[in-house]
Length: 367
Image (cartoon, rainbow, N blue to C red; front, side, top):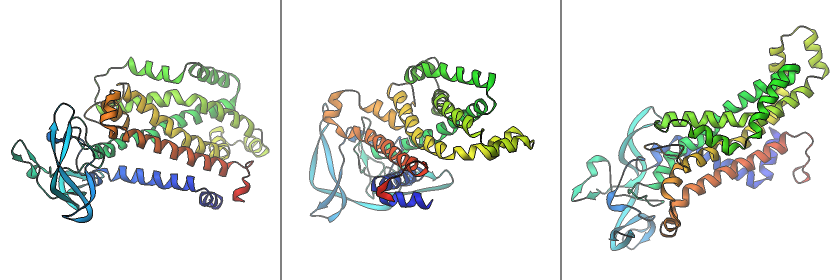
């Protein structure tokens, strides 16, 4: 741990990546509180609205605020600012009800506007829809993109940990058995793993997902995608663990434990697995982004998360349909930016863990 902290301080990119991941997962846990609206809250008069937050006006001076806009072109969704019409952004305001972390029922949100929203001559303040503040703009239905990104992070960020846990469990069990016992078990496990390795991973994922029913709710889709990605990802890790177990089991202390009659399962868990901790930690850290990207690809192709649930991949699929969309509504790329930042952060952190835990690595810049 001391070496890890020293390396972390000496590498600002890895340190920044750790902070970014901490913030992303904190925002995920507190998503309902931080987001001003739910993922399904719509503002029909604000479809394809650009980001509306400004920080200065003559009315309020330097403060976060929103200038009122009106739709002047319903075909190309062009908006015009109304001079002098500003709404000040307030903190800890009332909004749609939710359960914080699934436990505490409340309607307090981190920020919002204490002004009623008018739609078709009707005031919607009583329904928790105050005048909208769009940090990242809105989609084709007038839904706040910032809120949907926060809600989508719950799927995109958790699928990596769950998928890696299942994948590494299979790799440890099958690779450990093959490396420790050898013989027919080794041959059977390796041939089974090589069968999946020979097939390109993306093609296999698409095939397995396409043969399943598309009439599934969001929970079923999440489970199916996680199982498919885990089932495809374990062979490479199993081969690596098998080789390391096969090497470690020849050590004298392992031979002594076997001669003393200690059960094989205890030998594997207490004496062999701890020797593989470094490679396991690195594999987990570098494996999480691949699961996140795998879910994104499936959702982008329409084989992943479906409405009413939302993930970063489904946001890209629903909003980035044509190049024209990107030209007129560039804020639709923001979910992809979150995906890129998350993937790079995990990779930089994984590089740091690899260099810290590798006994043969020596970085002169941190010694």
